[in-house]
Length: 380
Image (cartoon, rainbow, N blue to C red; front, side):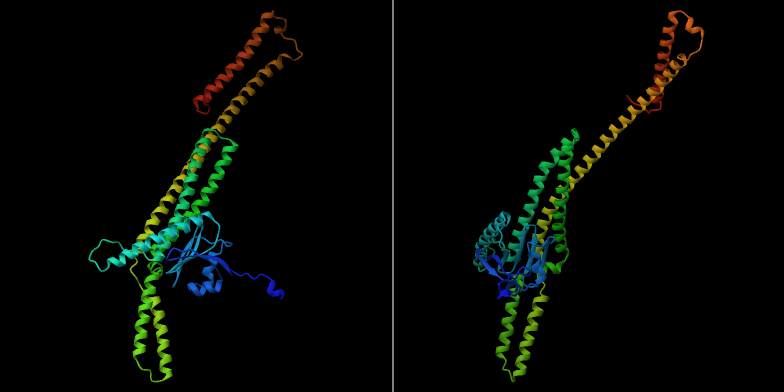
């Protein structure tokens, strides 16, 4: 009884899953991990990607019967007939579900028109995307829009803050720019990961072929029907031969699913469109990063100039101190307890000596300053 009362949770376990079907309905069902594995044909390691507790990088995994999508806030399993997502209260996920339902409903009407137009010649109706591609397009669009929105918000904050820092260097402005740069690095990494994932899919034809779930399902159904028809027409002689026929049928089913190579041009065009969009977002972030680097270089130049001015002031003060010390030495000489003719001279001689000492110090300072200007060691 104690073991039965303890909550048992391993991996994803039993969770509330939001299921969006081909008809646009989105019921919430309590489904266990093993039921999801049987329903989608996914291994447990692929389901761990969907666990919101764990942190996995963005990825799109094409499998035999499903596509696993992990892009930003979207964690979904796409099959040929439905989209499964862990139920959450995130407003971004809610907006994505609304868009997916709207896209599926509108595409169903277009698909019905396409079916009706097959009997007519050249009706001008475009081919409707399969359900899994419509769902994948919604995932890509939602992720790209989310990243584009964050990039736009960061741009609106970054450029004014950087310009203000250039005009006035302060602790507050430096802290603002530091926070902006941290956000820039984080967003750039997320955008780069999505871009790399799309680029990997575009470079691998086999991965794109795995995502044609509807065509693989139709081909599999047609092959099964033809094989069963042949088996029903043939009269089995013994039970062993019948069992052998069933084994061969299962092997043929596996070969059909694994060796099917559809035309990937349709999916390639879809991925290229969002690859261009995410690449543009990454380019904006790259330009912003370059602007941050240029601002840092400008700040460093300004600080170096201030430091040079302080060093120059220190040199001038040191020279003035040395020359004043020379004048003090002259005064010290006259302060010695000795008898010279100057002490008994008229009063005017005292002022001549004082003025001469001060003038000599000024002349020495001007000579030093002129030498520094000539050598370009000092500047006004």
